[in-house]
Amino acid sequence: MEHNYKDGTPVRLIGVTVSNLKPEADIIEQQDLFTDKTAKKKVETLNKVLDNLNDKYGGDTVHRARKINQKTGTFSEESRL
Image: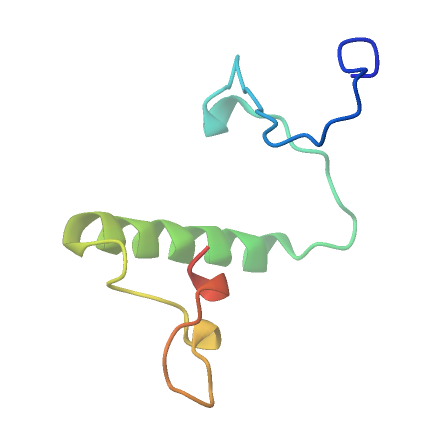
């Protein structure tokens, strides 16, 4: 960046590009000795079900309960990411 940017004015925008993505089934994942594979599979299955429901009925249809702000009973903006 220093080679292309020398005048010292503040940077307003930086872009990121991603290419050559692979389907999830083709990804080789590093194994972890401390991860419960059964629990991980259950979470992945639950996430797929939630994604399918939200795709079918709208993006804000189903949320995990832990994303609810306990004081207000609503979802905070951070939890929607």
